[in-house]
Image 1 (tube, rainbow, N blue to C red):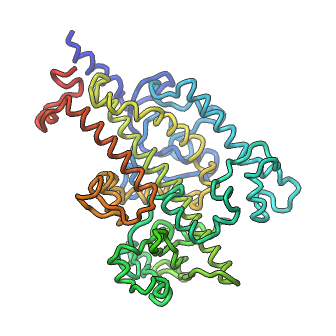
Image 2: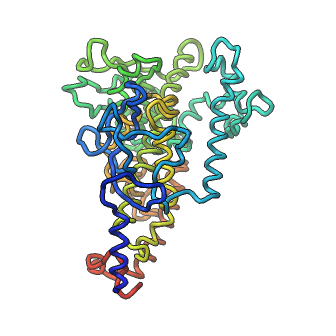
Image 3: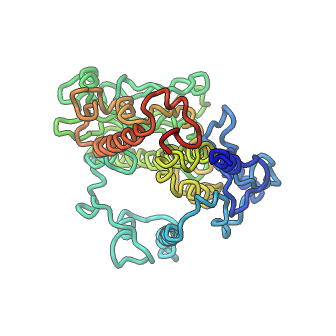
Length: 476
């Protein structure tokens, strides 16, 4: 029996039939839409739209589990009880190793203790589930404070307990914080919107020249943009469509635009923050906006700090939902599935990719089951609440796979320019930008390794075209 026939038979088994419930010990890599975020059988309030398979809610594919449909909504997949979360299906080859599983359980226990210990410590407090002051926030980090587990103290807090309130730290975190991938070069003033004006009216920014001109060190806005010294952190279009819905709940949110200036010392200075809400008479009438500028005293200082807090809320939500979940976990899973369905384990590209796919399907399945579901911890802690996953689908509409590659991604965002004389072929416009600097070094190393590895098997483009899913001829 030819060895390639055995490989083809194995691939047919891995692809499955597209029907039936998949057993926990199975090794089937099949596709499905994201119809398991909601829990309509438990409550109508926990129903969630199906993501994927439609132009309204586009989404990457996930691994199919084959669980029966929900009784309340046949389009949704039924859910496992939370107590059996670790029994959720993922191919047996993708299951956590015993050591990895031990780490996951330990981290989950610690996370739960950290989440609830401040609440337990507040029993008897009139504002249960809330902090009364910034001092209460700091107690979460301080050794010896009440609570089972403590969060590690951020370095900036160790150096100065109030440093995080400074404009300098606010600008620095856009480059070196948890979500350093959203800041962009500002190329037009005032900033405009891509939202459909027929639905949302005029969403053009209300930031004026007079509000920022005096902060540019003698430059005009046009000159500063020409010199690549104007930047924007723009969460307006992603938040505005949901602002009205969210502000009818206990959550309160603004769509935000933050304009920044690159100073001579290489730091980013926030010039203005625009906080916007839908017009009270209807979305078609555009936005109602408040523009705030830096202040150091009085009520203006307090309002400026609040404005920065609303920006940080948007930053945190976009990081968790889009940068982290959508652009990392969810977008990679289809590649994992496709690799196992199409390439033999002996294929050189399979061998190249397989180490990078470790644990992805299992951890994604657990995330859908125990973290991202309707009413789960993510919905309870990020600003879109019950609209969290729906919002990620809207963001996915504009996701273009080739644009994610470095260094093209940095150039597209306007934080670097093409420069053949510079290392990696691009020149950084912000020198002290740890994400951009470090990511290019990592990207270059990976690119070099992949080029050298694949060159052993593919000498020409024609060799790629003639490749088979088993092994590359003459190099098995």
